[in-house]
Image 1 (spheres, rainbow, N blue to C red):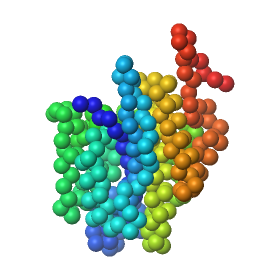
Image 2 (cartoon, rainbow, N blue to C red):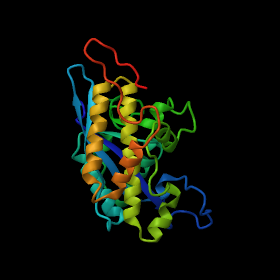
Image 3 (cartoon, rainbow, N blue to C red):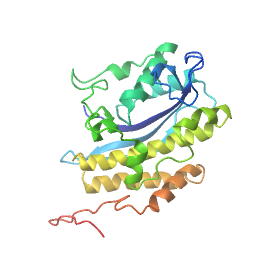
Length: 269
């Protein structure tokens, strides 16, 4: 049965001082996923609707971070895997197969938290653990790089090239310092901004790959704009994202031309 929900997921972590070697340089990225302590799990959640031809549109319900700001890692992981188990969701990540999901699974193992739903699939070839099943887990970096054939493809670079704001409120290398200063809300906002970029990139990729058409693409992004407008007063980073996106000078940062009946769409400009 096709998924009816979409989760564009990102996590933020800090080095686990109990596991990282004492002589590890502070300015070097920690390569081992299990050495990363989870401090935030954020996502954009959308409904997947299909037309009579099977073309999709992804209508945003929310952008948020799981749990509460005061949760420790164990509670964050329990909340995430409990939430995920209740959803029939397609998961979208950027390098999630190489980082986010290994971290979420390995850290869950440390606390004895079940993640059974991740290991269930429709068949031997269809499931979250299958690398070539993007209707289950779409690692968008892998899709755009032909599974690593094209190297050096950061989310930031692709987002900015398409007219999206890219990172807002910091950088992944600054998360540990933010946490050290007690700025967890800033970390959560930063993580949510990455999810917003990821959702918009997924929508454009779905158009590129033929999973969506221009009308579905535009409906998906219009639903994201509504979500940002509705939330900007209480959560200023949503408004900042929207304003910077609207101010882009890129060729086609938001909507694309739609074909009229019997007439092919032509690029604007």
